[in-house]
Image (cartoon, rainbow, N blue to C red):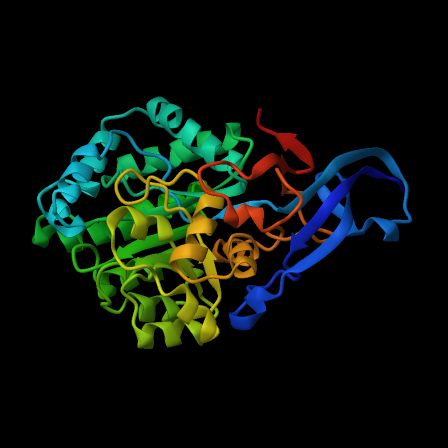
Length: 408
């Protein structure tokens, strides 16, 4: 049978091999095929290899003219749906206030919660649409989007409905996550809110298929380990995966909880120490680092180099959000990971593709191999390293999702 489309004129095709997460040294094992070709049918990859090795027949052929090709990037951590802005927070931080001081004063995430709760689903989708399109143009073919700015049960459901609407219309593949972000301000209300989440929110989300995972923000000013564990047990009982924001400002046991609960990923890790790094490395949980946060907030970068050196699987995300990471480029996040977290170019590509897929529990993307979805990016130039080298311009020329070129 003929393949539907044979893509040639690929100067270099760079990809990880195998669906499993790459740990430690294996993160540097990027396969680079010179003068490559890619065969596609029905939105999936039929064959990939050197052009000279192709012996099949194709209905159509497309010559890319000597450009580099990589797997579609996967952004495993965004908060792309929100209303309002955090410009006042930005001014306060520039004047010397810390993220935690702003949060305790009623700003930060809580101000976004108020603005988001006041917006309709239609408004939230309209606001999120250009953000997702920017990530797509930067090479992200799969984008995780979290709730978490709703707080009230009905508002969280509305956020997830907004994400579902966005997913239905977007050319990118959208993955929804239910995020339990902040507890009530009144300490006596915390346990009641956890009970609501477990009795109402998680069951409803699971019943309607609104998210594939539950994420909890574990931090001194957010949820504590015992509370997060209670919500995670409920999530797993309802067939949902778990992941968490952890060790962003303080290490209070979130990493250990995530590893113990078999979390898909533990994200942030700017405050992780040696014990946390070792715990992640000894587990199957992916460490998702978010360099945009370190750049924007001026906090220490997550220990990406140390995580890899002791054998962890590392992924990279933008953490696109209004307060701590207004970063609209997945390619840019990988470039920052090289400069700020100590990743090498090959490791950054693996972190933004196959490892990011594993951080979302996905096995059919993040690499260019037969049987995978045909999601890939074509660069402006012939060398795959341009993706993490370029700053201030988009290194991506074309984005393909399901074997079709998307975008303008």
